[in-house]
Length: 100
Image (cartoon, rainbow, N blue to C red; front, side, top):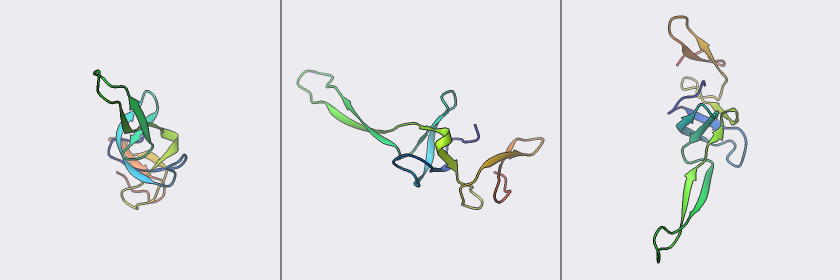
């Protein structure tokens, strides 16, 4: 995967399309990422003890990797990412050709 934890991404599809955020978790086996504060869902939890009330928990749900685009830290634009370098595998922005 060309996306890592801590990268800034732009969401391309869905209810949060056009918004940007940082990746908090990467799930490479499922091909999904969790973006901080975006794609929020509400889960209703049952009470654990008798006499206690149930609660609503909000959490960021995973997004498909193909629905996010990496924002280049050098030029600040959303761009496709490739690999450059022979000794060390560096990510390269396809717009500004900057490596990061």
